[in-house]
Length: 428
Image 1: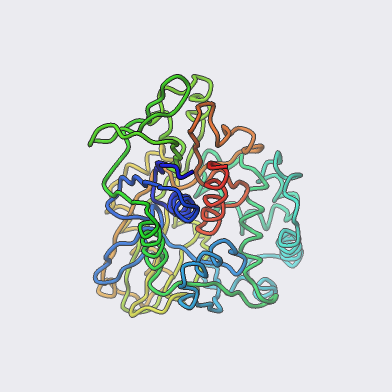
Image 2 (image 1 turned 135 degrees about the vertical axis):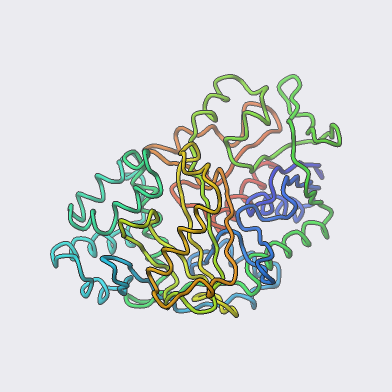
């Protein structure tokens, strides 16, 4: 029997939930507070270029994403490119990302290089993450690679992304990040990543059109104010337009919003959501007249730069100008997150001109900053066991976000796969 189901959030997971529901004959209604679909994959007009506010790329192992492209008839718009990585260390731009680059890396002993390489290789071969679930990440890495490689290649990544939380993260979560990039290689020496023609907008528009064509709807600028519960069952969704009845409700908005949206949950469930922590991001995107480098990803270890790396997106997706993303990750409560956009923009200009001294002020065509308070969860050891179940103790109510496919890091493909499976479980 067809059900009328509210879906909160029009990011990739929310759209995937609605997509699956509509294809299975149900009537999803997606509520989105933003004026566009996509969440962190949403695009904006960057001086005439439609591009994501936050960078995204695709790996050959992204099976759920690739399957959806086939179903939507847009797989022909997917392209694979051999990309390069670099490392900015000791005021020098060095090659990175393959065994030869590791051997030639200046500033690291041969023993440290060997230990680092063995650890990275074994991470790509590991399939069982459960033994790492309750292991603390920094100690795990240091035991494998040693203090020298830790200081040069790893410490700043933790310090400038997780700050005070860096010493209590799950090794399983960090391992999944190493493995994903490692599995994007088609041999030991070459990396292949993918982009979609038109960027994420191509997928988002196709998803929205498919949902609407099959009887669902997507309502933009429609933030949900409260989910109503009566006698242990979800009954309605409240927006500025009033109350609207639904058979079921599926929330895919960041978990920290749940206590505000569903204040009538049992107190022990509310406390679980209130205890969860998230990293925020200020992501600066610059459009340049000339390339910064030939690398897609550039790791950074520089005492004058408070970033662990940057992405030169135009070295993956061909564009008329060079596009560079510089993300500043930090806990949302950190004082830095409240600093003005101009502080971050000026930092980025300084950093890019240091990496490439040929850049001048007039080479910056445009530069913007975007902010996202709940960019990704902070996953401490045993994280999955701390999450409430997706099916809450309220009939007809499900809650999930990118936390629920731990230990995998947030990604479009992971959100699609999880969202579709959740949709099937909800209507069983």
